[in-house]
Length: 221
Image (cartoon, rainbow, N blue to C red):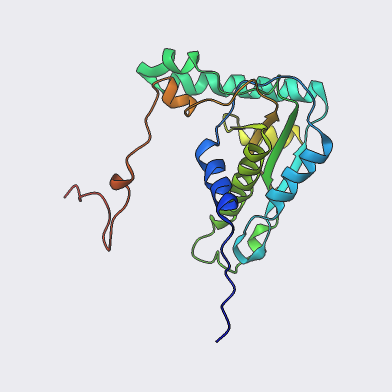
């Protein structure tokens, strides 16, 4: 009987995948150096090769090359940053001390959005319409892991009014921005997630989110 070919990657390849997962960071501090266009093309390739429910590929990418437009986007983020701080109550001052974006510093800025006309995609979404958003998140994660492997920082900014940003970028009715991605060179990657380092939150032990056959947390009733 012939040997069955292995579908497993080599040990170094496997280690590289897990290393990218372990060392991926939501970066906020960037150098202004330009990003090699070929590298950016590879990152977008990684994003576009993400899985999507019903193969709908709902993601759209807008590269922001106009400095004035970047500054307007930064203003939108700043407005929401202050509103978020107010909503946090007693943690307002802690939040305002955090650096939450690198829009004016990063070499590249990409807005990732949901396409319009998504209602026509029923496959996999009839009872879970939010799977279009899940698909876009997969594309962003692909890009994030590829960026880490390439030694390039990436930060996901979600602090903005989506209607204001959609209007600013001329999005059609039904389209919706999901993320502003700041991409660029960094002095170093954070040794731990920044929000852990800033004592904002800690990673939950996996035992608290994993269960077998039933919900992992006891019912309040």
